[in-house]
Length: 189
Image 1 (cartoon, rainbow, N blue to C red):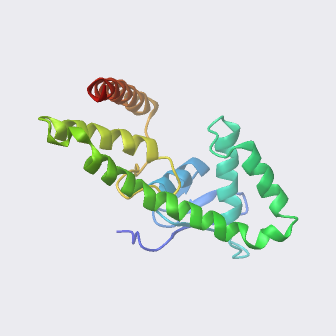
Image 2: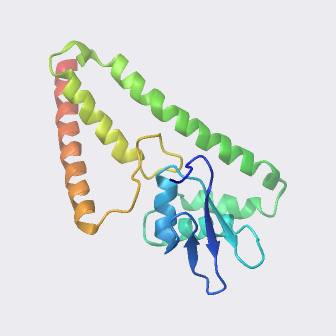
């Protein structure tokens, strides 16, 4: 059984193939991204030299997602990142980004708590079902975020049919949420 508290060690062979030392099989960048989304820390090292290649491969994963139109980073942020490599800001940018993502992770759980506590519908019958739907919707929204809340990620990549089912479920939750918001706005009038 693997120790999830230790980083998953991936070795890069001279052929550039990536080898998962826990499962003794080769993995792809998408597999590594799935491990990370599942909350697992990953360390990628060159087999021959022992050099840590983790940063290089994480940047490659981000670049591939961005090139496929899964944009998370706005162009102005990317531009500022490039500028930070040639300015005095390079010393504070890593700390700023780390602190920002930590605040985002902390804020995710607080948003859910506040939504439940401040809802005027909390006393209405059936509120628990609505709350469960909101939690599922929030889980779907945050599952792809770096460092997502525990319990909001998938352990392994899904087959296209499963992803289509998830998309259908997400669309259904979005429709239900829109209906609930319409009802709430009517109650507020």
